[in-house]
Image (cartoon, rainbow, N blue to C red; front, top):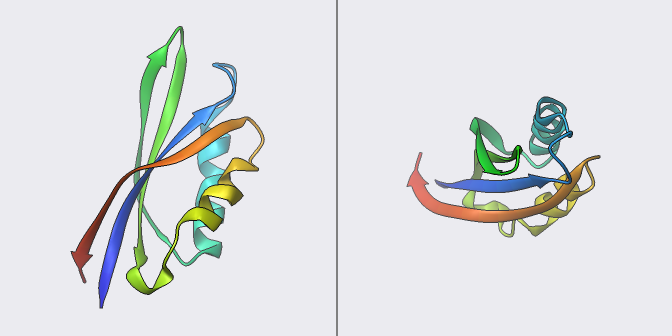
Length: 91
């Protein structure tokens, strides 16, 4: 069975948003969607604003990531979520 490795770009509403809290909440959401957290990184955007790049894997039978994206958008302080990478792996 193959797995899909996905990276999301999570954009906070402002530089004042605690990305640690966003990451913690997003990890809980991943668990609810049977996704396996792999890694994260913070990427500077502009004027002190940083985006959170979250990488995880899901079973390819899981299908669409839109329900997970919508769930992460409800986290306090999150402005937007978009898939920036998706690749199929074996496992």
